[in-house]
Image (cartoon, rainbow, N blue to C red; front, side, top):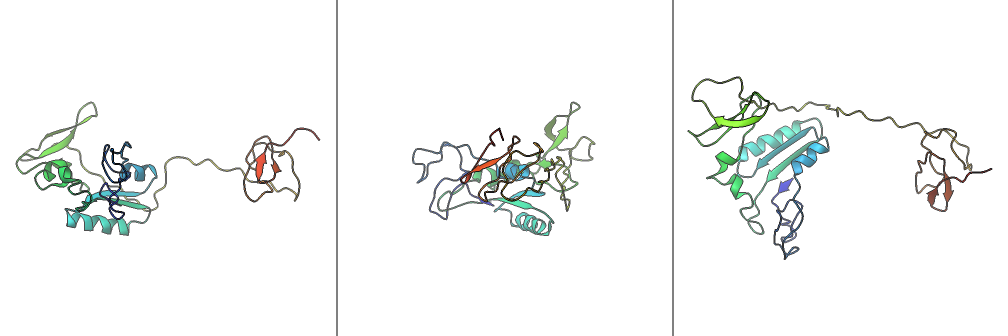
Length: 216
């Protein structure tokens, strides 16, 4: 996903990732919607490879695309990209040359999480209470409390959440209508335009479902 916080190909309308109060041709008084996080959306959809890169680091972007292509499963890559026509310097506060070292954290599998300009590097450490904080990077040696990156890209990954089984549909004679003998069994209406799963039974009325009436 190329994220430049704008719809550039259609001449500059605000997008779902545009910041609040973004003034564009489609939002002349400023956008009201809070932008969503594409990476969070991909993680919530249980994609098994999720990454983010930016267009100012060609080597990192190429490596990310290669690993996503080689991954056996659903892969999602967000690219923070500039649109110099309709939204120039969209990520300048993050990817700008002067601030890049302090604003970006390169994640390398098995390596400590560190960032900052040369001589002023900082690392992420874990406190005794389990919380995280940044601390000055030591000139020599290392400490067990330095947090390291662990990238998990397991082929055939499955969700840890259990999936409820669907009750099988019992056969029914053609043309019959009435309550199901098993109230917990999903039933298919004779109508091809809908599916009714009412626990009290089913009947058809034209092209819509309706609860079955009591009686003979």
